[in-house]
Amino acid sequence: MHLAEFNFGTLKHPFDDPRIADFQNNIDRVNAVAERSLGFVWRLSDEDMESVQEDQEGPLALRPNTASTLSVWTDAQSLFHFVEKTLHAQFMRRAHEWFVPDDRGHLVMWWIEEGHKPTVADALQRWTLLQSQGPGEHGFGAAELATLINGSSARVS
Image (cartoon, rainbow, N blue to C red; front, side, top):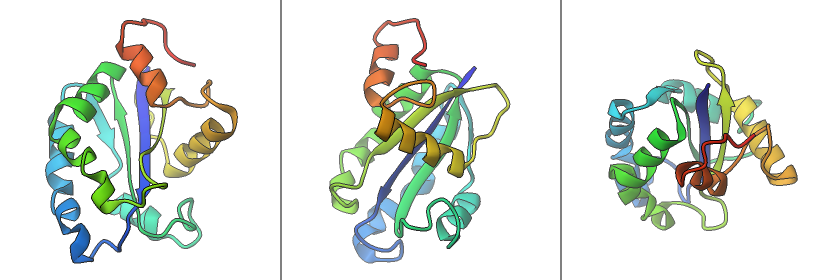
């Protein structure tokens, strides 16, 4: 099994606004670190994510100025290392500069079969279930990831 993760938040300003330029100008750098990271399997390309974000009838249609990532990792440790121990962490600490305070850092993770590439629609549905039902087979959040990292060999399901 591999670990899928979807995270998203609403930017305070449109992508071309100079007030989020530092975020926008470093997306490629952070994504390159992810793609070189041990345990990285796949991520939805920038072009495909942009297409989903701009689709007026798609899963993110009601979320203008959304910045999001959908990726797959071999295991929880690899994802955690990328998020907390690389360049990514530096930008996470600055999220308050670019993202709407009450609408950032949304995260859902779930186990998938190796080779499966999840969709944003599936990810958003899993996030919605996580919000309404709490962690379960449909998905889990950061607290459960911490449990996995801190020595629990069982998968959160």
